[in-house]
Image (cartoon, rainbow, N blue to C red; front, side):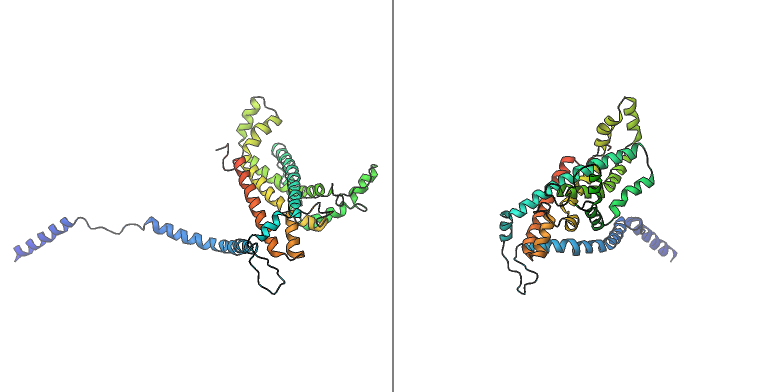
Length: 323
């Protein structure tokens, strides 16, 4: 009997050895952790994605559809599909092309003046002072609502009662129609928005300048480079990614100029300040040509997308000399 039990035990041990070692459960797989993190990320992103779909994607799709119709918001009849008729009308619309020229003039005036002044202010702060009070002061005009800024400058630049013309009269210069003269109205509006946004732009550029290592400036100073050459040969090239961001944001914002014009000149005098955004607004809400206004808006989207793409490619915004 004992011999039989021994033989049975040896047979079981041989069978276990032939099957190999018993595998024990290991740690949880890495994929399960990644899946958990992906679900958590999706949960946190859901509100932003829903808001983006509701307030950006849906209006864009709806606007693209309405641009192919003759939609009138007060008409009891449903929108009638007209195909590319609105775009054909747009191509032959002289006021549309004039509004584009007016907008281009404003974009050039605003971006050039704003960027140059912001670069000067940022360079002075980076090289001379890093006062928090000064930075907060520069940000104040940007924090004031655009309508308030426009109203304030509308009163200051008034041809009869404005403080600016009182100062000109004190030095013997006749009153100027800053906002009523077709030749001065758009430069005046560009100057108003330059005053409002230069401080914010300067802070963005200043933050970019702080990322440039001091050792580069010290080595260049040892080589005998002066401040102006340091700025053009070191600061500007190393600031390119931030500068590209500033220029793209400024370009898009300049094409969307509306509130300052609506408060001060209302597109006048003689359409001298009727930018494309204000022209779209008038077509949609003054003349109730919602389908045509949607076609104008879609055209503006294409123009801005093309200009932004070219700007990013030309400035090589994705690369940095610091890398």
